[in-house]
Image (cartoon, rainbow, N blue to C red; front, side, top):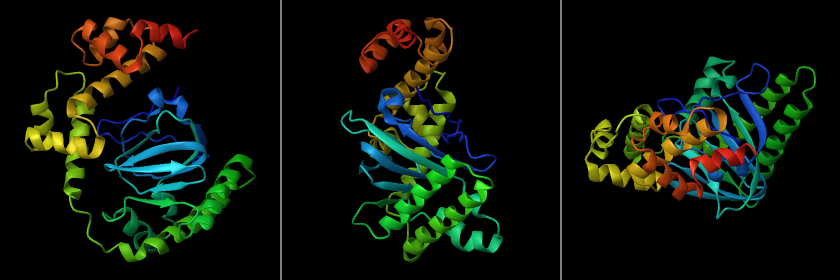
Length: 295
């Protein structure tokens, strides 16, 4: 089972797996995630998802991108996103994440060609399909990165950096004309959404109310609900409960803590209510879930 480690500001704690480099390259299976869905999060890394087999939906800043076999999605830095199963279909994919700083060998090159893209409010993601401009070039470079990581020849880190620069050059040239565009209408709402998600993930142990969630972004209750619906397709309280439930599943799987303590530590004041919504969400009681994963 794969769990995502998310910081209090809702940014993911990224773990890298390429020596001491700020790079992560690994094949993954969506069925290894709880409920075949990742937690909503963001990070400073660039993230690439290449579909090896199957299909899934990626949600980025309230938009849904459907990905099928051999599609490739590039998500810009600091975008609110998560991947989820499409109608419970299986999906095996290659995940590549790298911090923009890995391309900072020359300060002027970094500022002119890297930071201008990662800091742009006009570009949140790029989707590559077979009929998309530069698709074959991107696919070849993504495959090359995976093969370099798998082979791990002497000085493979130099090969990785070289391939990442080539990849970035392709992305930058494609985006260059869009960099000066104004962000899409409603971009300010995304900032509000991040603030409210951060508030929930900081205070989930407490009896959080809708008024408090809205106040964390200095907006009304109605505006709060509209923003959550727009970006997460959930009500604020549904998101809060879902987040609490996901954390409780981690504790059920990885600790010996009794279920009552888990319920209270995750913000549920009544064990009966916790068991009820856990069963409604996952089709079994917390006790049954713990027994099932340890068989």
